[in-house]
Length: 168
Image 1 (cartoon, rainbow, N blue to C red):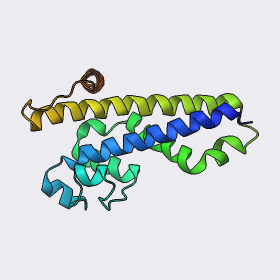
Image 2: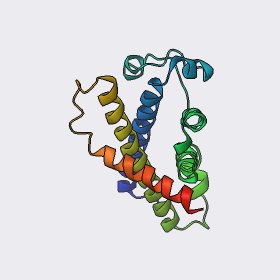
Image 3: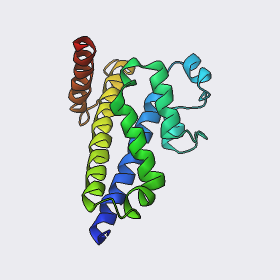
Image 4: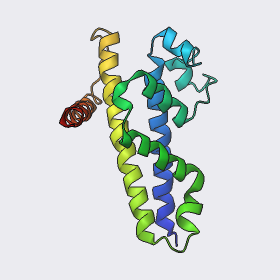
């Protein structure tokens, strides 16, 4: 049974997911024109994304596919899990967790907790990517104060990927 406070948690998670999707779309907007053309996102730029006039209604799945095909570091099970859990949350939460008597309340709590963790982690990673990209594109003329700490999460992510690749 859903409690009143659960709705606030669901609402916050939905907003966090939408913010992550915007960060991903913004990051993809930095890609070279030929990559954007190949992926059908030629009009994608930061101003139109932030003004919500970009006309691109790419889903998180489509955005992640673009990332997977252009950046090796995003071809991993955890990034795939993020999409799967996001899709369940957005489209099948009731069917998967609320209307099935076999699922215990703990299952829903674990699901929401794991999805929240993944969203926060990848929000930090993409914020770190933005910080580094902004510094590079502006040649250090634009301050990234306040988001620089996310670069650490990005570096940790890349180190873990490197360690897991070479551990095989």
